[in-house]
Amino acid sequence: MKVFGYVRVSTSEQAANGDSLETQKAKITGYAMMQGWQVSEIFVEGGVSGSVPLADRPQGKRLLGVVEKGDMVITPKLDRMFRSASDALGTLEELKAQGVGLVMIDLGGDVTGNGISKLVFTILSAVAENERERIRERIREVKRHLAAQGIYGGGKAPYGYDVIDGRLVKNPLQQASLQEMRDARAKGESFRKIGETHGLQAMTVKRILDRTIDQQ
Image 1 (cartoon, one colour):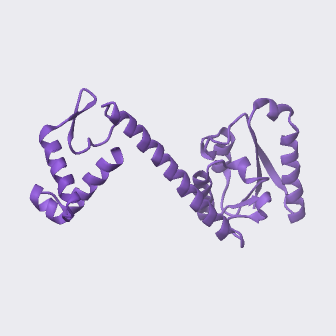
Image 2 (cartoon, one colour; image 1 turned 120 degrees about the vertical axis):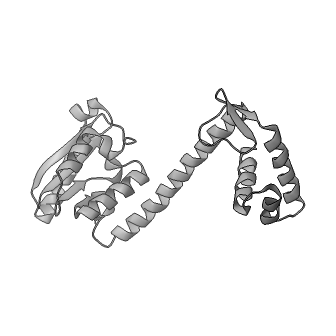
């Protein structure tokens, strides 16, 4: 088994002179000594924001490239390695599948193999889903903003519109059909009945009406 450390500071100046870096290293070597381990190498990530995924950082990428089954990685704090829960969750799952341990000292030990593993993964999964939903909502907001200006934001054009020269242009026939579907739904007609009238599947009608509501 080989033991590796990972530390990160946000600026190059901190990497060269900061006490934070030495403190992180001391925590790693101290923890390893208590376990009877010898640290083979400490990967120092200097001047890299935590928002950058671990695999996209120079030292993070190098670390992930050298670890093998049975190895152990030690980092002093969760936020030294990860800022995004989705990045943390994906990396932890990959390390666990490879048989590589990851000690986060601030969380009490190996988060891939001991009693706290399930709790950590559960929390990260929930936070990661929240992050993804915030991203989806930002994308929806951008698309709504573009649509309000008649600009095509990419993907399939919404029902009722054509894309002409990069802009959304109302399709008269589909707009009329769309209004009929809205009116029918307002009267309480089912998606199935509306679909039969317009030659569409019930779920297609639901998606069309849901999408137009979301764009309003």
